[in-house]
Image 1: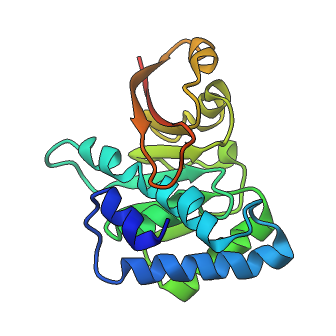
Image 2: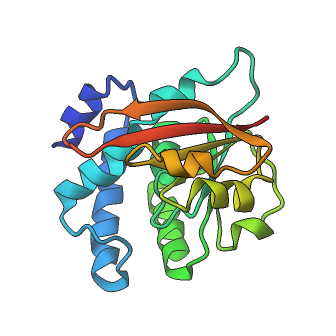
Amino acid sequence: MKLTEGIAALDLVLPSGTKEKLDNYVQLLTKWNRTYNLTAIRDPDEMVTHHLLDSLAVLPLLEKSVPAGRQERRFADVGSGAGLPGLVLAIARPDWRITSIETVEKKAAFQRQVKIELGLANVSIHCARVEDVAEKFTDTISRAFASLADFVRFAGHLSSRLWAMKGVYPADEIAALPVGWQVAASHELSVPGLSAQRHLLQLERT
């Protein structure tokens, strides 16, 4: 699946230059991956499907969740690894503030290099444990970071709304959510070129 075709299939309207920056991100990830093993996916075309389009697929739902007149969106991306979905969202929506939280230094170093080379002024990168981050955000998102219960336990202090990107619908994890949190909405995602199941869960305080 080519990036241009995937963006069209998702019916996304992106700022000028977005595709070029996403292409450059893949080039940087491919280069760094040879030395630092940032992702198990080696093929650049698979990176487009499994990383870029998978991250972009959540964008319409995140945009629809904004109440009219809401202040600037400030996202925390927890356990972001190589910057997924945070850096992809930052490229696609330069008016959003994205803070990436990643404990592994080599992954945080890669993200810092991406920020510099792509000129991502709306990105902050913290190499720290999420439980040690004291900032507050409008939203917190994670992509395969942990179980829902652990996501809430470690990141629930960051914001009152959490977004969990999952594969198969995690019924057992939902049942194990701690008291005080609930699934406000569950969305099945369709990622162009990817046949595997994908879901985005919106978690909120009760």
